[in-house]
Image (tube, rainbow, N blue to C red; front, side):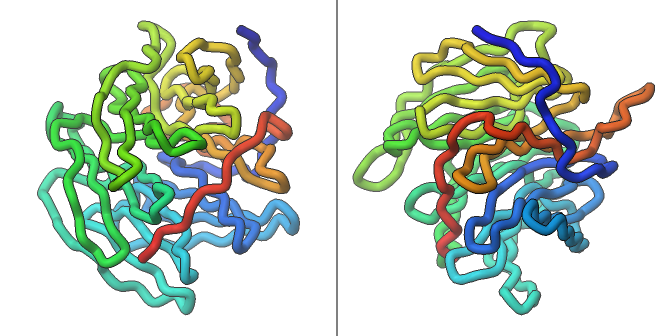
Length: 287
């Protein structure tokens, strides 16, 4: 295993309460990310430095590009669509008191795998659902506390998933016929005192990169589950990571400042580790 010093750079200095969900949009050459608790969708263009910020009407857990343009949003009360002209509409609405949206990911077939959690993080209060482009929703997991990072191996045969309080990254087998998952088993366990697993991404070598909430780091695990790299960051609450930029070689990392005491000047900023590895192009939502 190798560790690194602060090879990161500050992409966007910000004070996000709960920065999350970095996603590279190849169609626009922009990095998308969100601030869940401040109900903000951010974009950043690394070529020009241009930023945009859009307020949503409720807490937003994830944002992803759509195949036809625009964005899909995992919102407190369901799945919403932003059209290219900025118009909003609901694709699927299912409000549950005390529950909000959290992380989400898009599978190779264009379905959105959207997580939820209770605000009080009660065990069993969250879900992971598969959302088709026509708005059909299938509950995949219904006994979740804090549904977090989701990603697939480059060949699509495995899916990785985090329910943060378990301190595990789990792995499933994926059916080639219909994309269903089965055979859940532990892939990696975060030891006591090292933080909690949060968002994740998978690189072109099949390695799994995991952000550590209260761990101040991003870890990379080999396809066999061996820890082989740690990127230490000067922010305790590291929330998620994704590859982007030219050649998908830069690792973007979101952070949070909610609940922190003391001086943490970069908490809530978007960070980047140039040349960290080689990512895999992510599909757009089919809706």
